[in-house]
Image 1 (cartoon, rainbow, N blue to C red):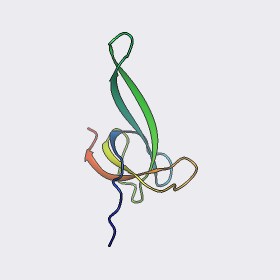
Image 2: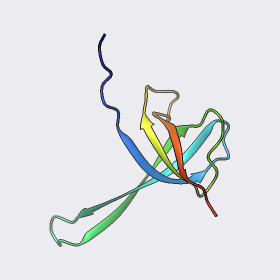
Image 3: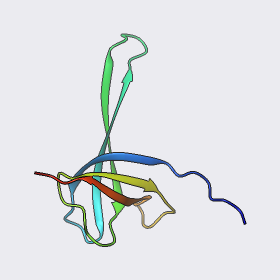
Length: 85
């Protein structure tokens, strides 16, 4: 039996859940600017598949990489880490 390859995981905040079975997750990353040495924040918006529509706007979620599900969706919801207040 062969093992699956490791899949990328990201943690981010849900910015939109208006689409059917799809959420938009904002993933923030920090890195040091190579020239100035200042720590810079960059945000990526990723579309993720949410089969049961369990994630709401403002929730912190974990998403994992998957096969292409549509033109823009390459991620799926793995779980809700914390609910929005």
